Image (tube, rainbow, N blue to C red; front, side, top):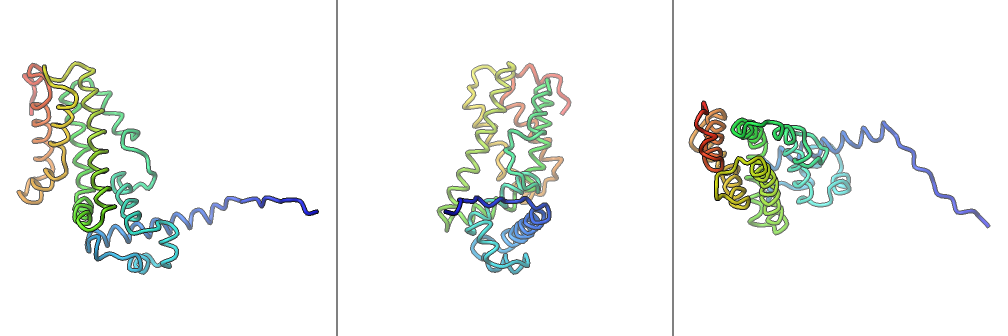
Length: 224
């Protein structure tokens, strides 16, 4: 009677490196095509051709076009790092809570927020347009905005815990105001439509957020 033998799987650094290189090539091709052609006109065969891999390889790694866009979104949000680490666990997010002065904390958050918006603005436009024809993308858009709201709520909660929110302002309302002011659509309107520079937008965002949610006495000595 033959023994049942479980074959061992050996980790191959070379194979893993090649797999990551292939994944990166597909994501690079997909990002370029999504942002230039849009969701509808981008196809998996075209992405495969652009990346120099087979269609089967793309489908094995990402299954569907929507799943591929989702992976491009997460990588773009992380600044090109394909590691799936949530925003709330990233070093810059945690570092902002070490800043005691609330206005400087908001300024720091605004600086990082602008860098993120510069990366994601084009892709957000793709997702919003695709959401009109794809229910899964509509769910992704809604989840994207909900995740942003939840991250914003953590920021508002910390301001409240430190006694910085203006009197009568609830956590929920503070979160809503912060979420709206930080919405990527405002960034796109002011920089793309109205021609503001990134520095002008950051200064406006810092002032607007500070006046919206902080106690007035915290703003009297601010040099905007």
